[in-house]
Amino acid sequence: ANHSFMPIYISVIPKNFFLSLF
Image (cartoon, rainbow, N blue to C red):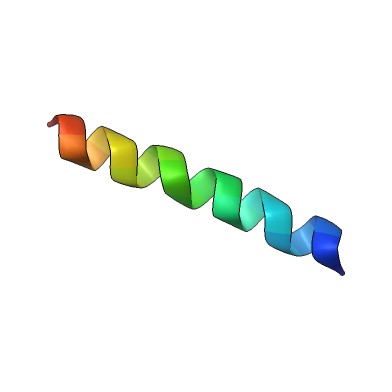
């Protein structure tokens, strides 16, 4: 169950980081 939540959190952080860079 936790294994499914981790990938989502890891995928959201890079997206916000990229948006902040642009």
